[in-house]
Image 1 (cartoon, rainbow, N blue to C red):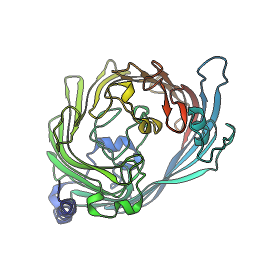
Image 2: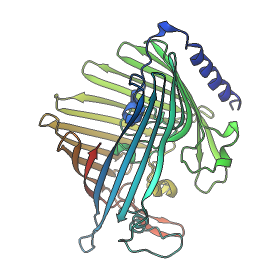
Image 3: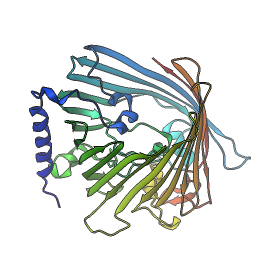
Image 4: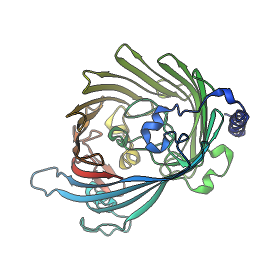
Length: 435
C-alpha cells in the first residue's frame, strides 16, 4: 500500500519544478501535448497565445428522440431534449486564463429522466408513476470552472476541468477518472472533475503529468468521504516521444463509491500507453494493471486498435477491449452498473467507419460494439450535414441486437423493482447552432 503522503509529495515536487522553470528562457513555448484532452473538449486547447480579454462561445442543440417499442402492437415514446452549452474564457496576457462552461438543459416527454426510468421499468422512488408527457424544470449545470497558469515549461490547472487519459476511441483503460459507458462509443465529452492538474514538457522528447482529484470516479461520493489524503484519487505518468511514437508509463489511485457500500473502494493501478504508425496504419494501445494480487487476467484492463484511411474521405477503425473484472457469462452480470449504463462484459470488439462527402459538408459515421461472449451488438449510425458555417443537422440511431439475456438487448430482474428493459432502440434527429 502506498504511503498516504506520497501523493502530496508528488504534487509538491511537480509544482516546484514548474515554478523553477519560470526563469528558464530557453525552454521554448509551452504547447498542450495531450491530444486526448484536446479532442475531449475545445476547452482544453491551448489559449496562451491569444490576446488578453474575454471570449464567449458555445452552441445550442435540440434533438427529438423516438424510443421504439419491442413489438409492433405497442406505441413508440417520443421526447425532445434541448441543450445550450455556454463557454467563457478570460485571458490575462500569455500566462493565465480562466475557463467556465455551463449547460442549460430542458428535457420533455420520453427524453426526461423520470420518463426514461419508466420506459426501462424502474419504478419512481415515491412509488407514483408520472405520465410520459411530464417534463422537468430546465436544469443549469456548471461543468467546467478552472484557471490555467503557465510556469515556464509547466502548465497548472486548478478547478473543475476535463481530464481524460488514453488513446483508444471508445473506452480507455488508463482513464480511471470517468465512468465507463456507451457514452464513450457515442463520443460524449467527459464531465468535469474537480482537481489540480499539472503538466511539464521541457522539450520535444519527454514530459510528465499529474493530477490530484477531489471527486470519486462515480461522482457520487459525499464530500466528507473525500476529506483525507488517503481517500483522494490521483494519477501521475511519464511520457516519452520518439519520432512518430508516443509512450507513457504511470501510476493511478482509482477511487469509487460502490453501489450499496458505505466506504470508498480504492485501487492502485500501473498504466501504460503507446501510439504510433506503421506506414499508413495508425497503431495504438493502452493498459491498466492492478499489481496487488497479480491475478491475471482479472487484474488487467487493456485496449489495442488500428486506424486506416482507405481514401481521403473514408476512415476505418478497429479496437479490441479487455475488461479483466468483467463477466464472461450473462448469469454473472451485475445489476447496478447496467442500470447506470455501464459495461459489464469482459471482451469487446469496436468498429468505426467514417466517410466525408461534398468537400466535408456531409459526414456519415457508423460505430458498433460487440460483446464477444454473449454476441449482443450496439450500433450507432449517424449522418451529419453542415448547412452553414455555424449550423449542422444530424440524424441517427442507437440500435441494440442480441438474445433476451444478453447485455445490450437483454431484459433482467432487479430486486425490489421487477423486470427491467434497458435495450430498447432509439431514433433521433436534431439541429445544432454554434455561436
